[in-house]
Length: 275
Image (cartoon, rainbow, N blue to C red; front, top):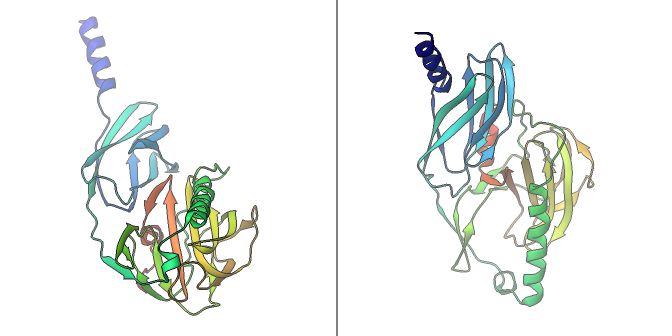
């Protein structure tokens, strides 16, 4: 009898403590939660460990980024806790993305060897920002809209440049007058300040937890690399540098390399995202 009880105890320890279902779309950021446990050690989903925090009592929260091109299907969310694993389900749905067509000078669509070399160098510099580890966590509770204006190109739009297909638009373009102040949406560290071939004058901010935001086509810089900035602080001004058909801000967000919609970030703080 004692042996049977011991086996039953082992079986109960191996069973999931609870199960929940969560839904997100391609390019989304989903906040998930867990109740009733004392110690969460990690939260794993989509092949990565994600930032989490102890909210209160036995309540925990975590944030997961779904890449623009993540295959729509069900994925496991595994909470490693002191009492065992808890396995939830994340349903990823296909996003609805529009077509975007622009016409630019030939030199900005058909590149010679020199231009290609510079573009690749620019991409490497931006990519290095996504790998940088920062000693603080992202604060998703208070987020500021960088600029107000008209959203001219939405996230995920299939781009056609001079009739030729290009990569999907991994950010949003907000049309607003040249010189409009660009504000940091969250506190963080300035990771990159550089003039680039396609992106024009660009700033990248690291917000911790693998969250990085990028601001392109600026006319002016107000920060330098390594500087600490606060939410709402001016970092630059809107321009039309690089490959641009008019004054606007390109705002992109990566969450542990996942290309996510800036609107998903805004929605986490309950900010009205209507332009």
